[in-house]
Length: 439
Image 1 (cartoon, one colour):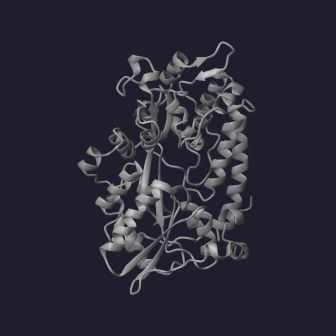
Image 2 (cartoon, rainbow, N blue to C red; image 1 turned 45 degrees about the vertical axis):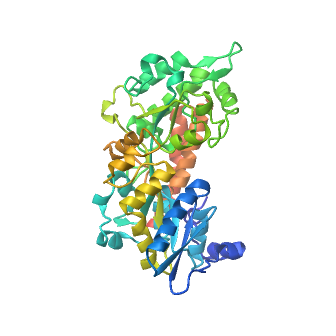
């Protein structure tokens, strides 16, 4: 993949893409007479879209000067890039935190620093980990919509009584491994029937495993994919292929149901523990409300107690694309979303914690997730981490997925898999820096 494809804003490619999409990318501004229409594209569908719709409706009723036209858009990130290249973007685009650096490098975003600071939305207003992830190269490019922190979810009915509470569950990775050996079940013919834990389930944060062992993928200047800590993490991943058998794990997971369904492997009891986000509780409540579960911080290596309380953070974010017709009005809506009462209502509706530094007691007391305080604490932890801020993050994550698969299937040793990934991504990064960042 070339850098131009990574950035996605080549003039010729943009014009051709806009023409190809035709009316799908034409921003319609059919609002209400006498009001400025702000077009807002968002990725959400279903109940998540309904919760944001409530916020939009409340804003539209709160004043008579701005009308937010809310549209649920599939492929919102790609379409926003293309619409920006074509000179007709939405006024607000709901994308993901992990895309902020790429969009910023592509000059596809409006700098929000001055507007945010002048409206009291500076770093002190937010939990540090969330705010810092939206600040890139000295500027603020997005504001949170709904955040998340990631923890280990546990089925107490599938683990021994002596570890069936958050207080008694193993705190270290070594303790977790011993528990996995203790409770995992195989049939008489060797087929896996229940796994105490699987690094590959659900497999959404393969880039983060090294961070749970104190590593990182990028030091702000250079890639560090094959660092000692990352190799240690992937050796741990490899141990699960040895423990259960690579083919046996693949066969076992092929029978898993989809995440958003009653056939989810955690809900059906095929796995006793699972690393997942704060939203998991909402899916359990909807699809299998009788499921017993609790959440704990993901364990840390026995010799790295300094990592205790670490957690991976992510968030959905609001941005103003470059070239938006109504920047001031768009920010007025974004500012409305950041109000504590509005933000707490939206986050509760999505089953997530709040990104704000100040959170009401009512938010905790009335939240459907009984472990919401834990997810809030994880977000505030000084050990919390996010995906690297690098414009080629999508390609980096893809390469980490490849390395994870190579190690999980025993196709390569961790050292070789990560060294190969380091070479491939470094080549791309060098090209990206020379063709994008140095221009």
